[in-house]
Image (cartoon, rainbow, N blue to C red):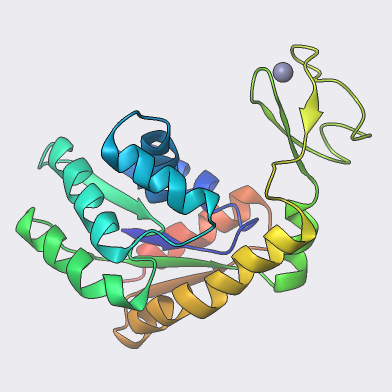
Length: 213
Ligand SMILES: [Zn+2]
């Protein structure tokens, strides 16, 4: 399975729930690249540099990293790919890599959320700088100046969750990733769900979509 959605759509949460329910490996390319960027290797340094310059990671690197992680998953275990293929140009190499690893893409899930709702949700997201727990303003914490309810650490917004950062990432999603989603829609593989609902309702809609045939 592959899963798509703009920031704030709850894509990561749904991917985790699907991974648990169907015993899948959850491969999230964004997280993988953040981990690699911390490594003192030539690839780590290259990715760190691209991140710092807010440049997109070249398709070729994405595909190679994906291959490496696919090889680590036992062949009998399914995979949920989060944010790959991320660009139209990645569709072919990603599908080819999967094929070479004995896998096929069966379903594509798209959690749709309006631009305004994405912005509203992202600006409410905070995280503890000490224990890294996530909090939603107005729900888990009432004021952004509060300390972490769990460990007392300092709570902050993510560094790139500024209005400019959010707008840039959403623009990239709609310009770069939307054509990939449309590709899978045209192939009749897409399950689109309304991301404005609660976590459980979204999950139920995805399961209904998966059971449809
Ligand atoms: Zn904390």
